[in-house]
Image (cartoon, rainbow over all chains, first blue to last red; front, side, top):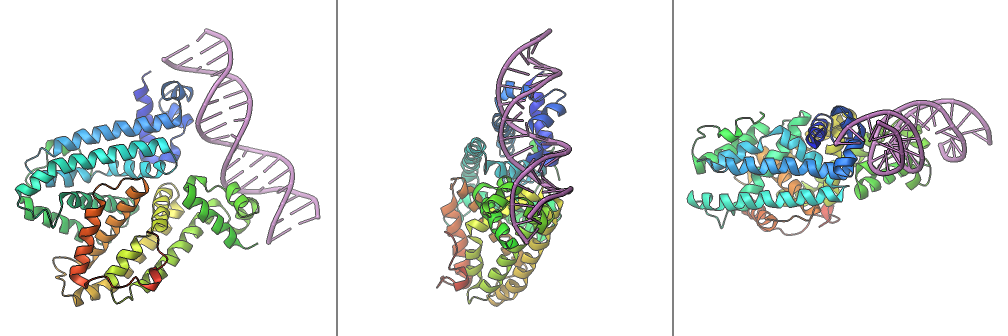
Length: 194
Length: 194
DNA sequence: GTCTATAGCTGGATAGAC
DNA sequence: GTCTATCCAGCTATAGAC
C-alpha cells in the first residue's frame, strides 16, 4: 500500500464533498484500508492536508509553466485559470487555511511562487506586445485575470451567472487586442474542464 | 434571553475562528447559556447559519444601498468592498455553502440581489460619466471591483501582498478618471476596516 | 423559556497483535 | 507495514424537570 492511494482518496473526497468530508476514517475506507495508516504515513491530518496541497500545487505549477511557453501566453494563462477542479481545490484550501496554520503556510508559499512565475514570464511578453507597463503593470494583469476567473468559477459552481458572459467577453477582447485571435488550445491545457 | 444573543455569539466565533468553531455547544456557552436553546430558536445548526447569513447580508445590502447614494458612487462602492470583516464572512459562507444546501440557497439569493442592486444604480451613473457601455458594460465594472477586492482581502488576510499596491493604484486611477478625486468617505462607510 | 442530562454518532490518535 | 481494538473528546439533537 502506497501513501499515494491515501492522497488520491483524500483528493476525491475533497473535490466531491468538501474538506469537511476528508476525515481519517473516510479517507482510509475510500483507499480500501483504514485510518491508522494515515497517521503512519502522514503523522496527522494536518500532514495529510499539507501533502495533498503540495502535490496539487506542484502539478499546477508545472502545467502553467508549460502553458506559458505557448506562442500565446495570455490565452494560455486565461485557459489554465478556467479549471473547475483547480478552483474547488483553491476554495477549499483557502477555507482550510483559515484554521490550519500548517496549511496556510503552504498556501502562501505556493501562491507567491505562482505569482512570481507569472510575473517573470509575462513582464517580457507584455512589453513585447507594446503594452504601456507604467499604466498597466504586468502584476495587475495577472491579478485581474486570477481574481476574475476565481470569482466566476465560484459563482458558476453555485449556479449564479449574472454578468458572466459580458465579463468573459470583455477579458477576451482585451487579450485579443494584445495577442490576436486565439488559435489553438495549448496541448498542456487540452485536459482542462469547461 | 433573545435569539439575537445567540446570533451575536455565532458571528463572533465565525469571524475569530472560522465556521468550524461555530458549534452548538460553543455558541451556547459564548452566549452565556447552552446548546439546547439553539435548537429551540433555530431548529438546527442549519437554521442558525442561514439566519446568521441573512442578518449580515441584509445589513450589507442596506449599507451599500446607502453608500451608492453618495455623490461619488464608484468611490463609495470601492470603499464598502474594502471591509475585512465582510470578507471573512464571505469566504466562510462560500465554504459553508459547499456542504450545506440551505446556506448555498441563501448565498445565491443575496448575491443575485447585490449584483442587481449595483447594476440598477451604476448603469445610470456610468452612462452619466460618459463611459462607453458597449465596450465596458456596467456589470463588468461591478464584477471586476468585487473580484479584485475579494482576492486582495483574502491574500492580505494570509499575509501575502505581492502586487497589491500596484493593483489598488490601478483601480483607483480608473475610478478617478471617471469620477474625479475622492473627496470624503461617505458617512455610511466611516466604520469600515482598513 | 430555560435548564440538566444524555442518547447516539463521529472524529483524531494510539497501542499492540501479526 | 498493516491490521483490529479502543481511548477520549467533540458533535447534534432530544427528553424531561422546573
